[in-house]
Image (cartoon, rainbow, N blue to C red):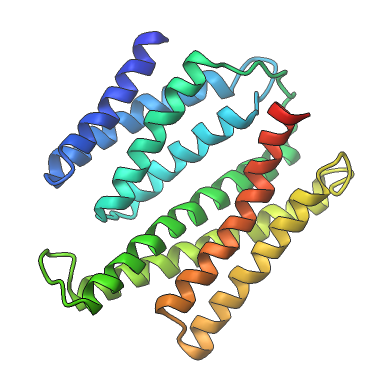
Length: 250
């Protein structure tokens, strides 16, 4: 397991070192994601059930975000660099400071809710990274900085299109996650988790407003970026914040 952690971290670092050589960097990115798949599976899945805690949730989100960026062919340098650095931070955190948590037995209905929640969070997390990069790109273009291939109107529009595809996909999956929570999870608002649901619903509403604004009024640029980041911050407070509170503050 030690070698697997080291190999995963090293592959992520090599992807960063070669970030400007897209083919080489992506090769290491794929390799890192494959290693991380094995690490995630060993930490998360056991014979008795799922083992969820703040560390494992961060690892799963990191792994899913990697897959999403690879499948969506998102070439934005800072998005890929951020994902690599997040993984490099999470791996030693888990390895050197493991948090022991009891596993929860497999229950298909609840498992569907959890998996949908994780996928929604990963999609919307990647959308927030794309939004940040898009905001930087817009600022550079306003300053008339056309020094790279990604500093063109076409690339800006392409990245904006990918941003809204991620938002719509994430919102739809989040809708399914909330619906399955209401249907399948007993005491959905109980157990001290009410704040998680409230923050998630607030984020859901903001993403819905953003999508409607995009369709009806053509929202883009700073308006779309700010609303996306506010909604993602609320989702992060509710989803990831609840695990951190349970693991480290309760």
